[in-house]
Image (tube, rainbow, N blue to C red):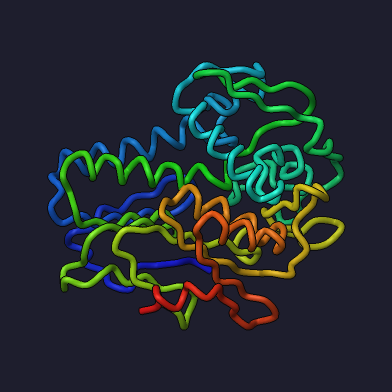
Length: 295
């Protein structure tokens, strides 16, 4: 399941591929120089936070066990905050478990049957500390920022637009969306969720997560990329699709992962001010506040 803009004006849209997905950004008042900066920012973010690039800042952190970088420190700090708030349902320490499940390279490069014969250490064996601008790792395991980095990047794009005085925009990074202001018709931005639902966003974000999008075969059966940190394995598919509406995209991104990894995180999501839509057994459930967002 992906969220997607229900109103498309391709003549005003910037489109490109990054972070293994398609990006679609519309900001009618933005100058081309600003749009060029936006695209550079997204590509630079991928170069910094991808675990599939051996030269990335994240790979350096996982190998050297410490990096000094203000942006990385801020991102990891936010990830740790959400991890604590969700009781560990969202946990960036699942990197070794994702690899052990067979997701050891960029998704489009996975073989027909991925190896799952590796054993991942429990996430509790890795300690992450942020001291000023320095991130330090102690213990066994690696960090995976895949559940928050795209949302974090979208928020940085939104900051570029805000700082430039652009008041109407929609940023869609593969179904993770942040919108501000109005579309060309003067309405809040309409964003489709699945086939039958749509919400309107004027200054908010919506992110989706699904066990159906990135899944692969292993000798033990099907696996997917959303890891239950408590088990260190692909989450049991109680919830197959989730969409989270929040004030910022990083929070929505992480919480969409958390409520699939552990549906008990729903309470934590609402405590953080988010609204949630879940699909269980083919039927949608939603928190009471979602109704006010529906298109």
